[in-house]
Image 1: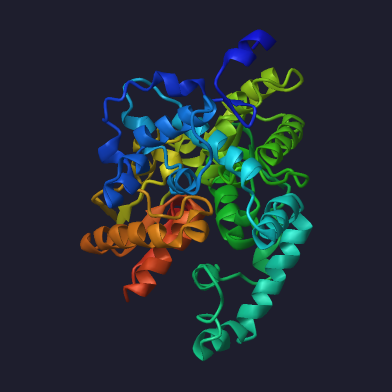
Image 2: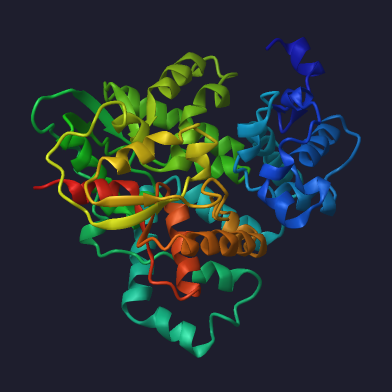
Length: 433
């Protein structure tokens, strides 16, 4: 974009929001928006937020408390994109708006410190994240967490901290938090070589999912590379308004995976996959990375879409379960993948898949949304859990760590014994080893 074009374009935080002009105000997005469905207010709909973003970019309004509240309540689930006839790039618009909020109204010292610790330190430095995970594991395994909850200390914490503590994931043992081995060779006839994103939170909380992913890919004929120098992909930073951090992490991710020399980059976390597929747009104005980002984004594949291209290799053992499938927002809306996970589940002997009402409706996790907007997140979770329990399934299958933690918490609160599994856990169970 030329300098003259930039000066006339609609911008927020230096990011183009020209996409607001694609909106034809038809309202087809309204029934698909979770927050509009719950609140019924125009400014809590995609159409209303687009109007706010355009007004901010044109300087007709400022970032008032009301504007910040309506924009911050957006889940960035992108359900509106799925139904939009005009192709409005809503995800990019709301990320630009949230980056502008952080620039203009970063909050008090406590909030700024919280963001710096998480976005500036833990997500950027895997060793620090691993150290924090070890501390959390000690807090849980020592009985301190149980004591704090029984004694009421947790309930006495200020603000949203009690809700945050309730969502702390159970940390596995040190052995299960160990990094994925750098190379897993293909079993049987070799099909090619792929790299795997091991993730940040995913690596320390759901390392078992990473190991299962490597095994399933290997058993299907793929050499699997897990570069040890990889870092966070930047998805949480982008969703949280840390645009500069998201850019740095995207560049670092591209550098690392380009060196791997692979046919594809396979991702087992939906938010990361959707974000990485958007690197081309994210780095479009960076002359050193624009073309590299487009090539990299084209190589990224969600695990389900990658495996569903061909039938799974056998033999597959029977897994006698009734399952229902929850579509993570950034798989179904962000990556437009709907049939691939169900195609894979249908190939597992013994699995009976039953439909989930509103399967593509957000569960309220949405990155860190359940931490920053716990009330709305809880409303959406209760709606999701009610539908899940109505299916009578043994397990809920999904493909995103945030969804797993959120739905499992909701089921516990409802007294349900139903479990939540990652898709790759069922696939891994089906292989006879």
